[in-house]
Image (tube, rainbow, N blue to C red; front, side):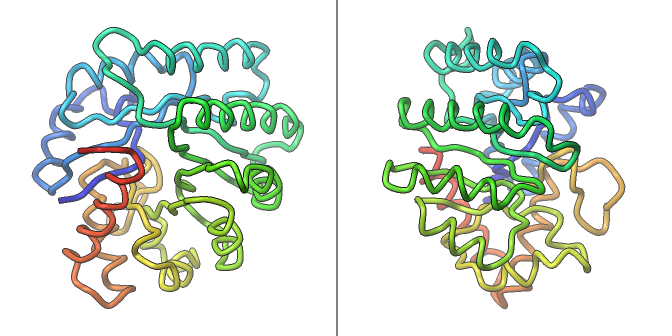
Length: 263
């Protein structure tokens, strides 16, 4: 059995065939799908998917860093994140983590201070609600290390989603908390360099993910990603590690269940 620890199946890209996508995931052995929030405008879509697939959906609540850029209402959205964490909406039993949060300086560095303020506020929420975090980092590893280092002794735990740092970054972050590292379709790309890092990361520290509809693995690269393709990620990690896919599936599923408190 597999767990896709990062997917956005509630997004509009799946409106035409979401049920079929879910069925394909289940046939591929996916037993749970972690659904990180993005921003207020898509939250109701997330809630609806949780109501329709309660046996499968594992909802998180948070504000994505790029949803802060040029958004005059981002602090209000942060307050809404806190309200939902305190009192989940009807039909959603609970949230299993705070995410997707982080720093993204790929498009612009102009909003670094706002993104960092939002990140720290949501890390504080995670500690207050005793929840793990799902952290997005793009073109901001040194800044991220600076923030996380301030939480080193406070019991922060979570996953660095779509990890694309080098081995030194992995080791530095691993020393700062109980962190896992999300591996997705990029590990199948020949020139990504992720495979070399994954080779050195213990299976006990790895989570499998798709980031659907993005970052589609080979041989479907360039097309819409979906949760069933987490099996391809599993197979590639197994090849890199020189073990059977069942070994990778068992350990990464255990990692996910322990991190997110899944039965």
